[in-house]
Image (tube, rainbow, N blue to C red; front, side):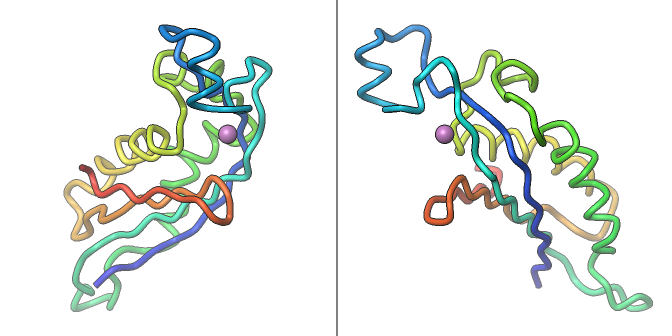
Length: 136
Ligand code: NI
């Protein structure tokens, strides 16, 4: 069984690879390569897998999941410029893919020793575009 929680955060980013030419960056990333950066209202969905506990009937307390998401992701990333304020995005291009990988890395260890396991991180960059990451 899967339980999920959604949260939103707003952040700015620049998508460009310093090892590539200006022309190549514009070709790959379009306006997102602009060094002034631009913002998104990201929507994060975190899914946990497990079996409801015999006593509590819960896989994981969703209030605790909210606290974990706030502490590990929302508080550090909301209203930040990812490239300048949120490592490792000073070195890693903050595409939606790479942000989802980073979020997975922050969240997965939080469930060690609990009956729940991180199943998926879904990150929407726009209403129409999103990434699913399952740890691979
Ligand atoms: Ni963007």
